Image 1 (cartoon, rainbow, N blue to C red):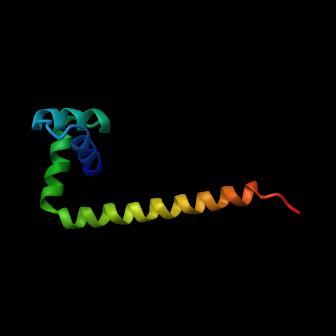
Image 2: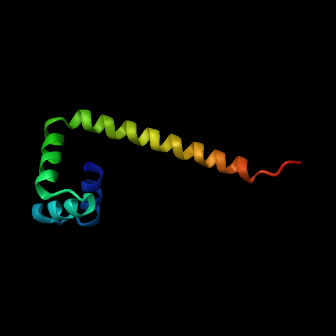
Image 3: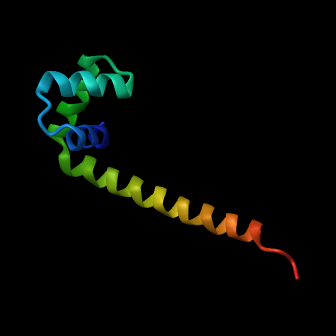
Length: 79
């Protein structure tokens, strides 16, 4: 949710609250009320959520590196 919010803001820095909620609802498939709950949770626990976001990014980066290494191994020819 927070990554989507950041992306939407980067794309349209002038978007107002209603536009942000509508866009978040659209990209996440959640009802506006559910988006509001998620944003309130983040407002209450930003450090914990930011930590989880950072850990998820680290895992995603590592998995991408491993996939790239795997692809390189598959491309190599046996001599």
